[in-house]
Amino acid sequence: MIDVDGSMMEGGGQILRMAITYSAVMGVPVKVRKIRAGRRPPGLQPQHLTTLKAVAEICEAKTKGFNLGSMEIMFTPKPPNGGTYNFDIGTAGSIGLLLQCIAPIAAFSDSTTRLRIKGGTAVRWSPPVRVLDNVVWEALRQMGFRGKLHVLREGFYPRGGGIVEVNIEPIRKLDPIKTESPGEIRLIRGYSLCGRLQRHVAERQASSANMMLEDAGYQTDISIRFAQGNEAPLSPGSVIGLWADSRPRMFMGESALGERGKPAERVGAEAASSLLEQLKSQTAVDLHTADNLIIWCSLSMGDSTYTTSSLTMHTLTAIELAKIFTNARFNVEGRPIGAVRIQCNGMSLSNPSM
Figure 1 (cartoon, rainbow, N blue to C red):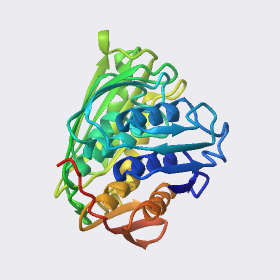
Figure 2: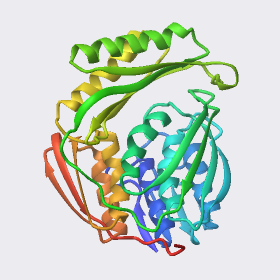
Figure 3: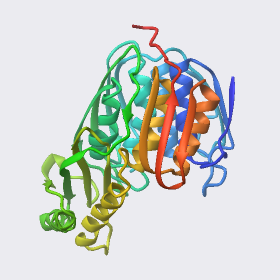
Figure 4: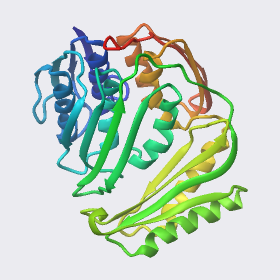
């Protein structure tokens, strides 16, 4: 059994999710202790518990400590099973973070996995689901990942209630990813969405972002989405997501959420300025995608190499966890602030069902 200190480095839910993912895909029991020890409140919260129970169902795992507030869990999985699953986070907890945990497991399962998930699609501290699909999952598709998702309803804080359907096909092995140089940007694509608010909120977000990006010399294609009827969120909210469309491919995206009292123009400008700042680094992967890629690169065959705009604590934590669970080797060149080059020689994990 692999023992993981949940308070190490970043010390948040990322450690728990990654440890459970490695346990499930590699078939090794794991104990995670001091879960979120430095957070307030510490221990498992509803969104973490939903993720753990979801993985346990997929893997028919034996578990211990799966209760709210628990600071130590044990997890002994069987090989993951494809099939049809329904998961309800029950709050505005992030669907994107749940998928961050489940997607690698589904990719190494025995058959197609179909998911219907309810929760938050655009919430703090995680990429909106549509940005996840168009940036992070686009990078994973270069590695052979075969996943598709469809947002049926957006979910904002506090009620959540967003609905996302996901289809993931199993693969035999993951290819390495090699993306170091920034591509030639043809367009900055994206969407600006609002629900249970006036349509002009989404329009103003997009207009502000367009103005800033065009002033910087980029052409844009930002769609306006006004969620109503069956697509209307349970709680009012707005979001804007942006990403670079380039050749060769780069995986740069950013987003911003609307808040009460925060002008729509500021929301759009916030997303655009953050993306422009990262594009200045002349790298190929944004700082959020960089930490998402670590687990996939550590499981892939051969050498992966990518450059990113910044070396975050999330990425460093992901690398340390990869070393604990796998024999993957890493080399990181650069400073925490500024362009960074990450190399990974993966463990070449093979799906025993294929």
